[in-house]
Every structure is written in C-alpha cells, then in structure tokens.
Image (cartoon, rainbow, N blue to C red; front, side):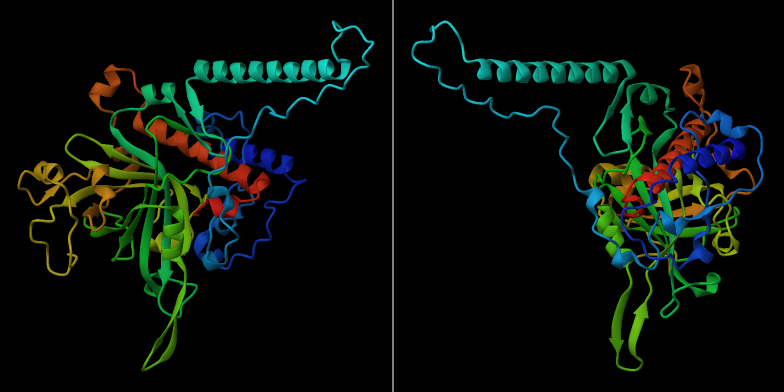
Amino acid sequence: MAGTRSSTRHAAAAGNSSSPASSQNQPTPEKTSAAGSKRKAGSNTASPQSKRGRKAGKKEQTTIEETMPTTTIEEQPEDTEMKDEPPADTTKDGEPASAEEKPAEEPKHEEPAVANGQDSEQQKEEAASNETDQNLEATTEQNGTKASEGNAVEESSKREESTPSSILEKGIIYFFFRGRVGIDEPSDVNDIARSYIILRPLPHGAKLGDGPIGDAGHNRMLALPKKVLPVSPKDRFMVFVEKANATMQDIKDSLSSSDYMTKTTGSRHTPAAAPIGEGVYAITSTGRETHIAYILTIPSEVNDVQDGVGLRQRGSFVTSAKNPETAAPAGASLPKGAEYPKEILDEFRGRGWMPLQPSLLDYENTQFLIIGHNEESLDKATIPQPEDEKKGKEEPKEEMEKLEHEDDLRVQHLKGGASHALIDQIS
C-alpha cells in the first residue's frame, strides 16, 4: 500500500512542479514538530488495492501544516473556496446584432446578410452547448454520480449500493490540540491544554474527486478534556460535542488564538490549536457495539508528540453515549446535558448508556465514552456483518481504504494545483 502511494505521489508532484503549491503567499508553518509529515501525491490511475502491494523506500514528505492551518489560523487568507460559486455558464445569451437597413430598391425577399450570419452563428453555438450538456448528463447518468462544481464530493448510486450498512456514517476527520497558556508549541502531553476531534460527514454513497470539499454546515467539534486518546481497553475517556451543525468557519474561529488581561498577571495569550492529523473516519456497528474508526492521510508516520497523544496510523474506539437524564460519575458531567427530543430519549429505554449513533452528534453537550482497543483495533471496528455479506456489500475496511486513497489524491492535487488548498483543509 505504501509503495504505490509513494510512487504515485511522486508522479503527481513532478507534474505539478511547474506551478506553485498555492496562488496565495502562505506563511511558513510553525508546528512541524507536532504536525508530522505528508506523503507525495499518487497517480490518478492507482487503485486502493494497489496500495497494499510492494513496499518502497522512505520518501520525502510534506508537513501537514502545508494543507492545514497551524498557529496562523486567525491570519488565513480569505476563505474564498468555501463560498458557493454558481456553475460556469456554458452559453452566452448575448443578443444578435441588429440587421443593417438595406437600400429601398433591394428586393424584399432578400434578408439582411449580417443579421443572418450572426443568427446562424449563435444557433450553432447554442446547438453545440446543448449537445455538450446532453453528453454530460448522459455520462453522469451512466456512471451514477452527481457532483457539484468546485466540490470534490461526488454522490454515486453505485457507491451507495456497495457501501455496507454497518457503516453508519463516514467522512473526513481532523485531530487538533491546543497548548497551555503561553505555550505555542507543545513538546509533550504536559504542554497540552485540550485536544479536539473535528468530524466532517459525507453522504453515505459519496466518493472523493479533485477540488475542495464544500461546506454543508453539518460539522462537529468534539472536545477531549483528558487531552489524549485511549490506547487500551483500560482507557475510558469522556468526550463531549462542543459544536454541532457548525460551519468550518465557526470551527476555525473556535480554534484561533486569543489574548486577554488578568488582574494578577496582566496580558495572557491562548495559542491557536494546532493540527496533528487528518484522514477519513467511519462510525461503524458490529452488532451490540459502535465504533469510531479512522485511517490517517496526513501524516504518513506519527512523531513522538502525536504518539504521546495516542494517535495511530489506523485506529478505532468503542463508543457509548450517556443518557443526559441519568447521573454521571463525579467530575465527568457537564453543567448542562444534551437536549434530546423524546424519540431519542426513548432509545435509551431508561438505561444510562447506549451505543453511539450519528444522530446524537447533532446535539451540543452530547457526552460519550471512547474506549481503547489493543492491537488491530481497526479490524475489530470493521468486522463484516452477515446481512451485508449476503447482499455482496464491500467490507467496511475496504470502503474506508478506498475513501482514504481518494482523499490522499485529493489533498495532493490541491497542494499542487489549487490556490486554496490550505484554507480548504479547515475553513
């Protein structure tokens, strides 16, 4: 898997070497120690299965800050790629030029030559444009895909049919941490004030092409008071939804730095949250349990700080949501719980906990446990279910690997040719 991706990325990098990584001048990222490195782009023809093949030598990597904001979040250039751009016109509705008046002695049956010629040219253009539109519609219908212009997300009916029902939700995931007051570059876990997970859901049948990901305003910002991720079944850490149904701009603002005054120490500086990982995720069901599983796209190898936080190249957690109407352990509850409608509360059936469902993440102050696995945690979270196997669905891990491969190519192409690759990763 690593071999094909590395060689593929070199090919894409070579093809894009004549153009700058971004049309905007980007400041030099500061958190190279925390953010890790990024792999080279791959060939567009590489398949997810080919990534599991031969193993290549270690390649030069690109830091995650080149595609995600670090301490300069509040100084990002204008978030232009997240604005909804209207589809480009395929025809021009310009009016035909007026016919020139002919001499009186000219026979009436002769039409003005200039107007005739311009009308004819316009008709030809309109006919060609209509033919192009029809061809595009036919291709889209044949492939079963639907994509928005300027949006990498393509909704595919074929992908929808092959995606297993045990994947309750899938999307893009980001991991961030924020240093303690006055510490811009945490060197170990003790320097971290809080960690965050950002979930960016995608349609169930979505696949990723080139371009930025449009903002549907359905993003979640999860806070981890424990600051680290669980790495064994003994680790049971509480997480809560700090922001639900948020735009990426809302989340960007929350992750920015701030300065404030105190009576005792004067001016204090809260650093911006720094990205430490980006990849794809799936909320999966294995029967009686649900899991949050992830595969990192960036970095290709975790460093010491990321490892200390509990970040792995592939990982998952068992999840269990808390009933807001039941008592919580001391020091593990919020002043105000999530306000669920009656139909969701009924799903608890009077129990204190139940497997996490994606719908619960649409409510702020939702609290849930994440419990670590031992080795091969991704395999435990992506066990194929009998009903999906009977229907010939793909295995959950195969769908996640396919989505990660598509995201890897998308990010590399944005870095090489898109002027707003940096902004797209978080805003």
